[in-house]
Image (cartoon, rainbow, N blue to C red; front, side, top):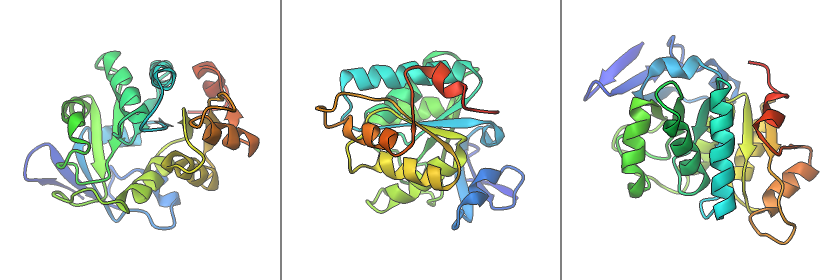
Length: 224
């Protein structure tokens, strides 16, 4: 049963509710409940994640926007983690396409505690043209251990994950590996062997992720 909380914008949905995303049941520890700010119906639509470095290069930000807009135009909802860098670029680029293009932000804090603070305006736009979701209760502040748990939700929600830029040790690689374990498609944009933010993507490709140059390369692998 979905329960409105504090304001019409916040809703709590329990596992087993009609709005609860069935893909989360693939996790060994699916969230018992989700807190949502925005359109609950969006959680049943096909989604793809776009993730990458917080300190992304200019080229990385352009690629995040390019893939987000191409995949959104093909009918997929764009999921990311509301972080600086690639996440923010993917959300923003989707919103720029207009009201029929939807994006989901999976938060590492309560949906009423926006982190980072500079994404307050972006989060408000997402709540109107998509939704913010979290397994954390309202008022919960961000903590380091929240983000790996957030990443597992991103991985499970989607039919695929696109990694734009990532260091060899990064949360984006955690998300990609979780996605592989869950049977999701994983895609990576290659880069220079000399660039530290390309090392993670190149490693994923070496390990079997599909090298992608454009949104068409991603769409050829997906059924939705």
